Image (cartoon, rainbow, N blue to C red; front, side, top):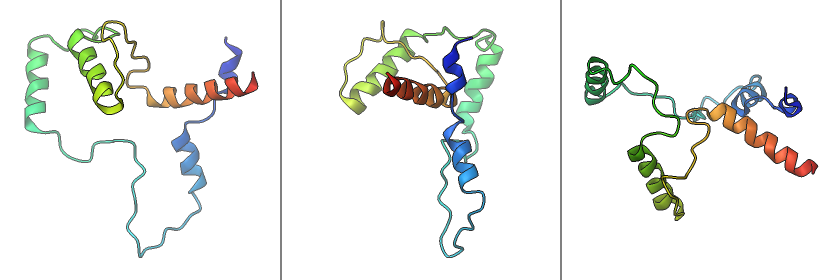
Length: 118
């Protein structure tokens, strides 16, 4: 096993939860959610319909390609261009850690510490 895995730190939101465990919020102020994107609203009917249609057509019967479809990759790289002004080639840009924000946060922290240690 890679020895660097022993250096992985807890997920940042778990640490934050522990830090705030004994804090009593001031009732005069509304709470500010530090959530990370969990849905708060019902799924719109058009999305429910698209999912239902996809299951009938067998579209959810297989896992998607690891790198995504060409259309999805073009969408991601287009967003990066618009948001950050970076030009990326959708054919060669790698999207690691798809839907894995806890792993990404932990590995990025590990990489940062490794760089500092030399």
